[in-house]
Image (cartoon, rainbow, N blue to C red):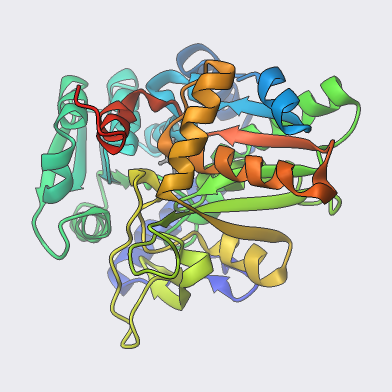
Length: 394
Ligand SMILES: *Cc1c(COP(=O)(O)O)cnc(C)c1O
């Protein structure tokens, strides 16, 4: 029997009946192995030796001086494949192996999760890795498509709907229904039906666990704020999980504001959306009055999703965390700020968190506070986009 998988009223299992047995099998395996000694020894081994954990909690001295706060960066950008996504793909990849699955499927937007899945599939010798990707995204992200193929994955273009991430997710679910015996669907963020939001959070909680230990060691105290960008919500949930029980720590999720939340070109699901069901769970959704999903928009592909993980909807409505939106323009400023002041080039997603950290630090009441910013990924992948935004050609 499945646990409810609810966060307050959010979450749940809103899927066609045909998928239920697969979700039950997955939940059972997850509950069995998450506390299993052999599984965890192996998980720790890959997180350390393959991905490069622990990541440092870096004191950003120059930025701190400039802003009059103590700013620490959790350096998930230093991980293999360039972002936090590998924490989850290693975890679920290993789980799939323990379950005896011979095939992984995944959805990907810009390709980051697809790559993190492909390298794990190669390393774990999982015979087949098929990645669903909207055909628009396949066109826009040729380099990442090639990266996946080099690692042995097959990229399947999805031509339905808006030909982007949400359609890729639909196709992946459709595939899973017909191949449940052999296949694990490796979802890339804290969304989807139970047990995905809890499971992905579990595999990303290493971020918060490390950050908590590191800040206590460096400062002898908890931070005043923990700030992370929110697409589907996995890097934020990973960081927040280390501090959610410490009410004195402000948890701040930064959404992709796009061209502004007053426009329709935004990815800020919690700031702008309403309650609804998307991809198997009740959460917040960008939708029109008839419940049709609206297209999200953000300069950073990772924040360009019209849904958000259900636990964030819970933290939002319960008031435990605050969600704010940062525009494309502000994010680009954050990108430049960190590159110039610290010599660290952040992913555009992470640049949203950096940009909000600057705003937060400049509020008079926050002077001198200690802030942890989750640097979810590095900016190499975004160079062409940033150059274009700056009016430069590469
Ligand atoms: C995918 C991605 C995100 C957004 O995903 P979450 O699940 O919200 O963390 C953020 N940052 C980077 C670098 C990403 O690749």
